[in-house]
Image (cartoon, rainbow, N blue to C red; front, side, top):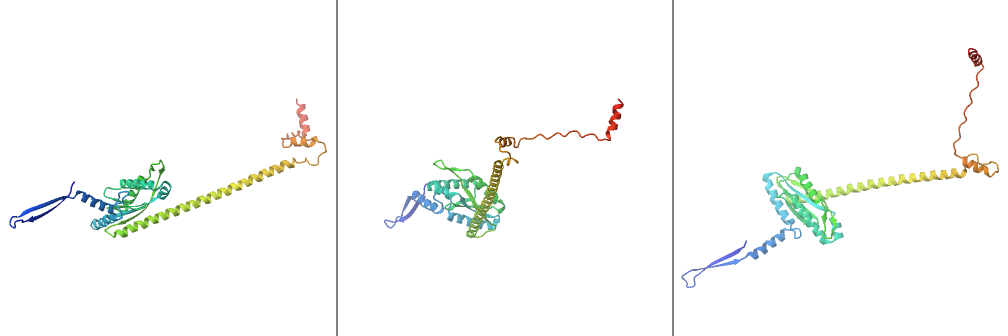
Length: 287
């Protein structure tokens, strides 16, 4: 599409007959340059997402429209988890590539009328006009699933990032700056809570590991004491070995038979009582 600017004027060279002069100038290049400047002022140069200024403008319009509709306007504030280690380890070029991938995935996870904006660094925001608080978990779930797959860097490294989010919803209008600030504070509160939970989990794991180490040390000490007792018993020899005759074969024989099973003596039949003799005699005489 081409653009032009026209200017006209009427001249009377002879003072009587008018002449119309029209000048048409092709302003396509100038218009393109102006549009580029406007887009640069309203969009992030790296990801081409709306920036904070454009987000604020669209948020103000959405809140104004919701004064009549009273459906709700939701802002989601996003901070990437794990971005700094990627940027530090693989370089800024890899960090820029990761930010572009995150921007594309977030844009694909929201509705057509929503706005995904980059606020700077690894912070993003999503404007959802007509979205009530009860529908926010659905959007958060879609974004989390979109960012779950890893990102492969040009060097072959595979990296992942997570999301820390905070949300704020206004129904019936409101102040754009206050709503964005509320979402920002909610995001930081969630991040602090997650850090506290991780710290508590680490402390529990450390206490459990300490108890396991203590129990293993106790078991090792018990086994060492048992081995020491067995060695002491073996050095003392079998009972009764001390004080035997001076024969050299006696201790050896005693040592060889120490601990061998000994057959128990078989008891002899008890003698018959005197009262049984007449009965046995009668039994014999009856044969």
